[in-house]
Amino acid sequence: WAREAEVNHGRIAMLATLGWLVQEKTVLPFFDKVDQITAHDNLVKSGGMSQILLWTSFLEIFGGIACFATIQGRREPGDFGFDPLGLSLGKNEGKFEQYQLAEIKHSRLAMLAFSGMVHQYFATGQGVFEQIGNFKSIMPPGSSFSG
Image (cartoon, rainbow, N blue to C red; front, side, top):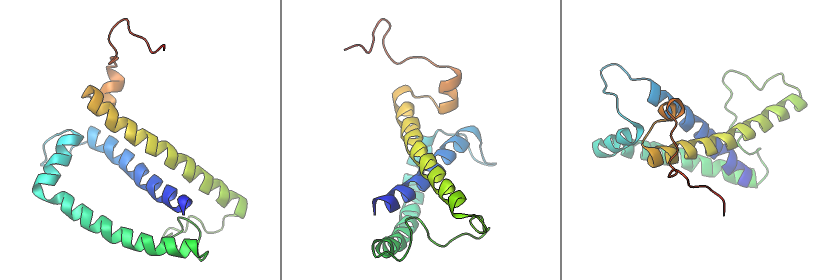
């Protein structure tokens, strides 16, 4: 059950991290450039977030059904049987386990990265790329972390 949750949340975090970075660097034609928080607020005001909530809830229902199948031992955690490109076919068991481990590690990193990017934005008011290119500490001069 915990592995199922970790895999699902990790996959969402990987997509969210990619989406955060892409949204920061690109602008679709006919749209204004806005930061991520303003984009979120605009989606809430226009009702777009309600649609996302509706479809996400729909997917969570099927995820709950799949979670019961995992608990009963009828499927592996995170295995929805969806592999349209056949990327897992023809792999030996050792290589497949290596890919599963890599997915978990990347998922954990993405969960930390996304939460770090969001908190960094609230703390500094700068985007990720702006922060990297123009780093300024938020600590007052002369202060230290020593306790």
